[in-house]
Image 1: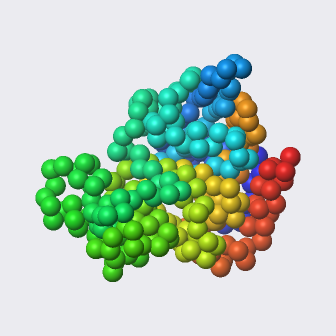
Image 2: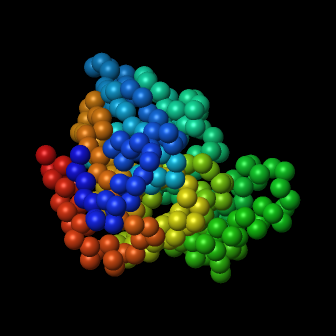
Image 3: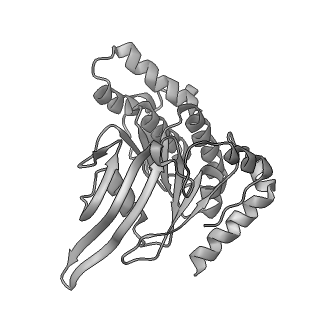
Length: 281
């Protein structure tokens, strides 16, 4: 296990009384993936996407998952979301096995899939009405406006989704996920369709809201720099078929994070080199 520790980090870890293993406090585990497998039947026989995959994630942790295309990253995320049935093993969230989708898991996709004829506010309100059926109309609206404002759309509540830029649509998608007050946030390459400038802006927006909400987050990404900047740990998947967790990299930058400080930190390039070496071998 590769790990870079600053002197201050070493001191902090030395005074901790709780047992740590691979960066995880097992007494605080929120999600446990045990011997997970995913098999798709084909005319030529079963295709094993994932096999005996094991992972533990603690509460309020931000995880990035990287790996080559086809290694099963999105398949894994969809199984955690309850959108894809499990072939073998188990996924346990807060002590209960996942058997299907639920409001305790908010999902942000690469494309936010907004209803184009509805306003930004109404798109967020759709989910809020389902999750908070007993709240008053004002309470529901206030929740939506709060999170839309948090992602920088305070002046765009009543703009139709079809009139928003791709970056603004993704901001609505982020607001929609947080507004549902999920226990876990699942992000499937949410910035993959954006230009580099907008991508950086929305990374900052996501971190700003996440720093306040502290929702456990799992993010799929192909961007090594993005994975380092956002995550507490980067999970590296082996190439498929029969993909597993190949390695785990602890990212020991303090939070809240500043992009300029991170990019100027010598450890950033050590992390980057380690991840790229894994992907190239």
